[in-house]
Image 1 (tube, rainbow, N blue to C red):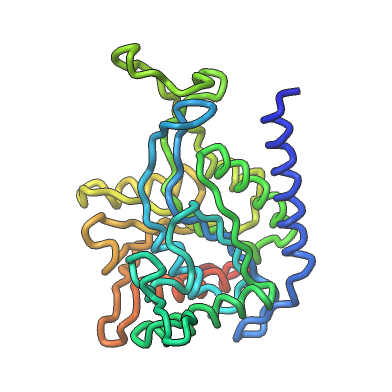
Image 2: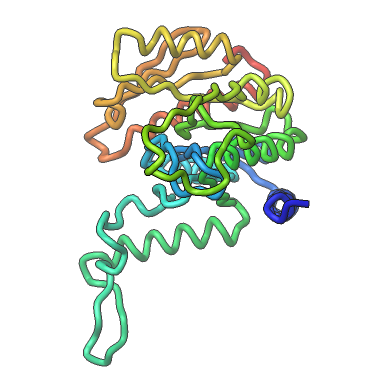
Amino acid sequence: MDPEMNSEESRNEALDDEIKSFFDSAPPLRDSNGSCDRVVCVTSGGTTVPLEQRCVRFIDNFSSGHRGATSTEYFLKAGYAVIFLYRRGSCQPFCRSLPEEPLVECFEYTEELNVQVRKSYSEVVKSAVREHCAAIEKGLLLKLPFTTIFEYLQMLQMIGLSMKSLGPRAMFYLAAAVSDFYIPWKSMAEHKIQSRAGPLDMRLVQVPKMLSVLRTDWDPLAFCISFKLETDSQILLEKAGMALKKYKMHMVVANELHSRKEKVVVVTDKGNILVQRDWTRAEDVESPLVKLIVERHSAYIEGSDF
C-alpha cells in the first residue's frame, strides 16, 4: 500500500478520535434560556488546490479568517461549544487585538534577561490567553486545522456525521472560502511541475457542492448558515437567494466585498434582514450577526416558525 495513503488513513483515524473525545468530554451545556447542549461548527479561512501530489505549487482561495475567528468568540459567549475548522495560518479566536506584526513584537527583554510582554500589549495578551485557555479547559473549543480542499471536505464530513446525533441542537456556520475548482488527485503530477517544459495547460474540475450533502445526508437536522461574497451588489442578493433554495440553507449571509466588515444582509425564506455594526458600542458586525443567528437557532430548536 502507498505509504502516503497509509499516513492519510492514520490522520483520519486520529481526527475521528479527537472529535469523539471532544463530544465525550464536553460538559452539559446551558445557555441563558436554560436550553441544553448546543454545538456549532465554524469553518474559517480559505482552501488550497494542490497542483502536484507532492505539493509545491497550489491555487489559493484567499480569506483572512477574521469572520470565523471573531464569530467563534461570540458563539462561546452565547453558551455554545465550538468546533473551529480553520485554515492553517488564518486568524484565531481571541487574537484580534494582537498586533499584525510578528508575535515577537509583543515581547521584550528585561534587564535580568528574562522575556516579558511589552506594557503596551500587556492587557490584550492577558485577555487572549485567559479566554482561550478557559474555553479549552472547559471543553468548549476544539480547533481543527486544514489546508487543502481535500482536507476541508473530508473533515467537514467527519464533523457532520459526528454531530448528527445532536439533532437540531447542532449548527454549521460555514464561513470558509471554499475552492470552486480542483484537480483530481489521479490527474496531478506526482512531483514538482518543471517550468522548462513551457506553458502549463491543466483542466480544473468543479468541486461538488457539498452543502446539499451536508443538509440531506451528513447532518440533515442541523441548523445551517452559509455565506455568499460578491463584488457586484447587483447580483449579491439574487445569488444568496438562489443558494438558500438550492442548498436548503436556513440562512445565507450576503457580503459585499468593500462593506463586509460594516454590514451584511441575512437572507431567509421569510425575507432579508440588514445587520450593521454598532459604532456606538465599538463592536464588530459579527456581534449582532451571531446574536440574530442564536435567536433563530433557539426558535428552530423549539420547532417554532423562525
